[in-house]
Image (cartoon, rainbow, N blue to C red; front, side, top):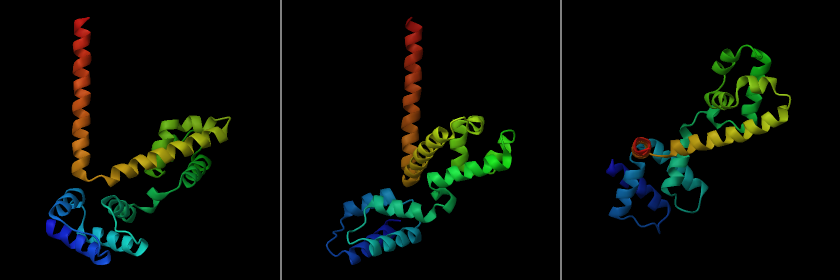
Length: 180
């Protein structure tokens, strides 16, 4: 609620006395942080206050909240993820792809599907596949992290805009085909 956002800003301005809070500040912070649980947001703010001598931004708070609520397996490094793939290759081998994918963490399984289980297992250049996996895993993890940072209403707005653009492009393509 806006009252909770005011409370959040009061905590921040208590720690950083030079921070000025206006109606516009409250409105913006409410729009961009209003989807968060107040206790989670307060925990993130308190952690940020202890870590920095500068007031936290909306982005700082959202990043810290995502960090707090993200399960450990989703914080896996690319090298740890590759270790998981190697372990599944040893356990399940080439022929048990479905079982291997079912027993991987979701992000690792997603990247393995992109590359292909058989391509990974049968590669004659394991260091090349490893390099490709590491790069792709990092990209997938960063994309998912950015998506988690966005408020749900903003995610919905972006999806609606994207869907509308895709429909417009399809309609334009159909019109172009009709003209030919």
